[in-house]
Length: 166
Length: 324
Image (tube, each protein chain N blue to C red):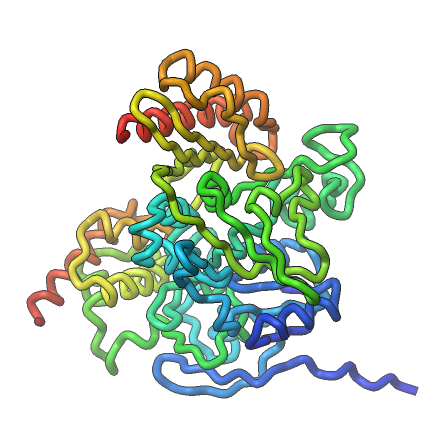
C-alpha cells in the first residue's frame, strides 16, 4: 500500500514584481532569488556568493535595496519587488543603465544588475548624492573587474543627467 | 550553499500570536531580516521545524517615546534605527553602532532584535557542511570537541554584534515576551559567556523591544576594527559612555564585543572620581585585559584583536573626555 503524500506546505503569495501583481504558490523554504529567477523567469538578478556577502542579487523591496539571496519569498506578501528588468521602458534604458553603458561601468556584467539596483535605491531617496554617499550606498556590492572607479563615475553621470532632465 | 532545509512557515500579525506559536513548537526559530539565520541555515547550521516570520508584526516595528525613555521595537530595521530623529538627536552612539553593522543592503533588512540575538561566530563554525564534516564537526554544532580550546567543555565561539555594547553602556533594558509574562532585563543579562548557548532567553521567549533611559548627561561612542571598512563583522568593538564633572570622571561605562562569547561590561569602578591621564589609561588597559578573552576564532590573529581593542578603548575615552 502506498503512503499518502505529505500535506503541502506551500502558501499563496501575492507579490508585485516590477509593477505587476502576481499570485504564486511558494514553498516556505523558497528564497526570493529562486522565486524571481525560476518562477517569475527574471534572470537579470544574479546569484553570486549566495550568502549575503557580494550584493549581486540586490533588488528593490519597496524602494529599498535588499539581498534576494537572504530573503524568503513568503516574507514578500504584499510587497513591491523591483528587478533590473523593471528599469527600462520598452527598448529605452533608464538613465542609470545608459550611464553604466556610456561610462564603461560594466565589464563582465555579473555584478551590474546588483550595482544598478543599489544605485537606483540611492537615487530615489537622494537625487544629488556626492561621491562619498555613492561609495557608501554601493559598499555592499562587490566587483572583481572594474576597480569601482568606473562604476562610481557611472552613478555620478546618472545623477548629472537627472539634474539636466529636471 | 545548501538548499534551505524543509520547515513550516508562520506569519503572525501580533506579538501574542508569535509567542503562542513559539510555545507550541519549541524547535521553531524566529526570522525577520534573515541576514544571519537564513545564511546560517543554508550552510547547514541548524534544522528548525518551523520558522516564525516577524516582519508582519506591526507592533514590533515602532520607535516611540515612553515617558522620558525611548522605546525601540525589536523589529525596527537597523537602517530605520540609524535615521530616526529621536535616536539621532538623543542617542547618536546607537545610530553610529547601527550604521557600523554590515552594508546598506543588510541594514535595510536586518532588525535590532536580530542583531542583538545574532548567532555567535567562529572560524570552525561558519563554514560549509562539507568543511565541518571533514574537520570532525565542533562543540557548537553536531560535534563534541572544541577546536579553539581543545579539551574544553564549552564552546568559545565569539559574539560579534555591534549594537549590544552601545546599548549596555547607555544602561538600556530589553523587554522579553514569554507565553505567560513580559519581563525586563538589562541588555547585559540577555547573554551568557557560552558560545553554543549565549542567549539567556527561555525556550518560549522572544525579545520584543529595547528601552533606552534618558542619556542623563552621558556622552557615548562606538568604535570597531574590521578587515574592510564595509560589510565585515568586528574583529573587536568597544562602546564607551562617559560623564565628566570638571576634572574628574563622574561616570564611565565600557563594553566590548567581538572578543568573548558575549558582549561584556568592563569593571571601571577604579576609574570613577579620577582624572583621565596616562595612569588611568594604564588601569583601563589592565581592566580590559582581565575581562577580554580573545581566542583564535577569526582568521585575523588574536594578538592584533586584543591590542586594537585596548587602543580603541583608550582613544574613545580620550575623545569623549576632551569633549567635556
